[in-house]
Length: 220
Picture 1 (cartoon, rainbow, N blue to C red):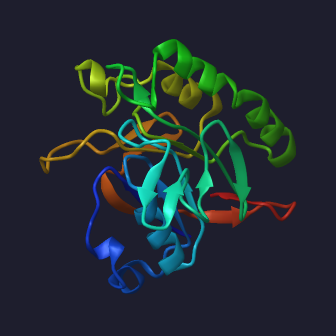
Picture 2: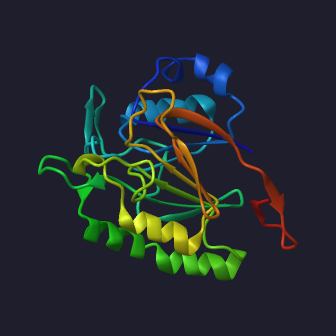
Picture 3: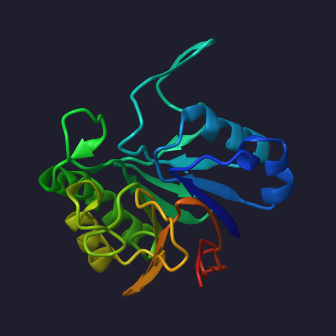
């Protein structure tokens, strides 16, 4: 199964009919924030696949177009403080970044991020009971604490995300927020059982899945 993940930077190719030729074999898409709603809608509609997303610190509650205001990308699935089960894959997410000024809509303190993460715990425990595992893919805009993050407050990682990865051990954590300008920037880190991927711009990831004895698909 192939995943296309996107965040932070728009590409003309992804917002053109060429996206179908280049990424037409993607089974689903994950958006990690700071991308406009029309961009997410176009990719999902053109590829004809589900798109799961969280908002970034540069997103707005509403985006205005000639046809009117949009409060969310139509046809796409918000992961913030939600758990979703799609095609045998267990997903959850948290939006936004660490609070660094009073002008952003999707900024939270470390304490507020803990509350966002704790809101996912009952659902992950239920996943464990139902499917034998807590979570497959965790999606966020900001990175976890001390992994792929930076020292300035704007780009510091989230302590609660690191705890979630240590405790519930999802197979993947996809995030954005940290822009990549140099080829030697580390964008993949294995943290315990979790592969953490900075998906700035776009990334393609092959997910190896198998079916267990109950018929539920899971990571091999």
